[in-house]
Image 1 (cartoon, rainbow, N blue to C red):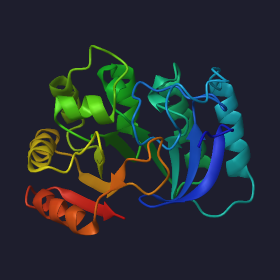
Image 2 (image 1 turned 180 degrees about the horizontal axis):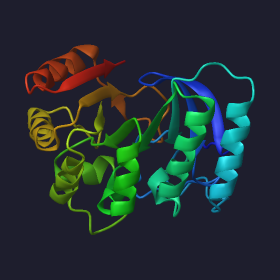
Image 3 (image 1 turned 180 degrees about the vertical axis):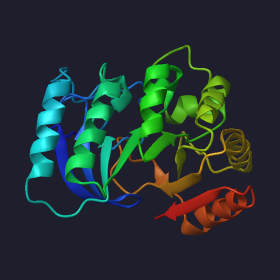
Length: 249
């Protein structure tokens, strides 16, 4: 599902509550540095009618107009939408704008960013993510072959070990989000997969880990969700590491 506006929702998020979405990607297109097999926005080759990102000024104006108006209480303003928000060339400046608007109009509301974390090697992006309440970094596997099959980074330069070490720079000021799934060509539920993820969580030391499975239509009908029993089992192992964990079904 492609978003067709810069500000969308609010939606009832399984993990974030009442969430007002901010889409920094084209209104009718998708731009992302990953091409995840389960992405609800579809594959990167789809939805390419629009390639124009909203300007910083447009994001500010649209968000201010919403926050100034009558609306239900928000739990979070969430940067998500049609792809990877940190690819916007003025991402850091937009985060600063959003913090100012939040403080003025909705001081009880948190700011969240859902990111695949590939841009955190950029110091400006990393600094912006340190400023938000919920810096949510995607890590679906800690094994290179599975990342290639599930997340499908759009660069041959993707170094998973370096990527995990880059996540550790936040010194606990991050949340790791892991989606578990199975299918004909992908499966990150094996003992080896879970062991590798646990090792990665230990390196990153996030303040918490969010684990969940498929809940919406995906581009491939061969993908299957995992059971609550499996998620609870993984959660117990994460808790033994001394790291907070939440399970969403």
